Length: 331
Ligand code: AHN
Ligand code: ZN
Image (cartoon, rainbow, N blue to C red):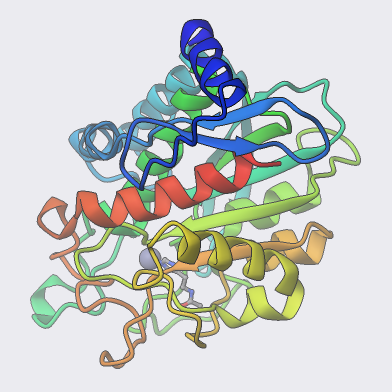
């Protein structure tokens, strides 16, 4: 890397313009405010894909199960290996039906001493019910949660791996939130025991941040970012709380040639983990698939038994992963 930087500097000094296009080895970008160069690493979708498959191999990541807890250890271990200071935040939360869930938020901090920070997050649990499946017989069966959960974590693990290899200027915290997808299934007929029944892990964190008074400049949530044919128009909670971050991310995608994945038009309004982090006081955006043609606004396999690896597309992963990396390495 040192040699390559030297080589690129030499080329620049000679006045040679090195304008590589997207997908090429590395890009040369003037860092804001100083003369140093930022070479944004190449996001490897193959690696994100393997990280996604690995999670599914544990089984269903449903709180209070052995499979869930084993996967948590795996995710923490990966963040640790990539060089992050890793914290497992364990808690107990009440679910919609009054039952208690033992949850684990998994936190990895890069350059924890840095003042300026960015928060990247996704949910790592998988939904216990395929309550939108076309076959009613499947409604009480769990989903594999390939796109809805695992792939967003897979993309963030690949970004974490890259940060471990080449540090960013800004400090980065990665949080995998638990129990996002434990919201009330439509078939539940009992008394509703909690009002905010989705995103239980991020709500828990917002009430008990892993560091007292934790701050980040802004945050980016990934949720269902790897489906074949998925697109990510503006999510409206993000536009409300963090219009400047929406602009930053969507402009970056466009400039990289990923404008077709990130259309600059309005999508849905989603009460997702970012809602609670925005309420906590960190402006953040949700990159989330929006399907204008489906009744739910989500991809057709959403909360069905079809949310498996067959829908996962490395091209979509690359578009999202590279866009997020270009944003963070330019801070
Ligand atoms: C609501 O539909 C209220 N929240 C959905 C957020 C979600 C579920 N993302 C993935 N699964
Ligand atoms: Zn879900």
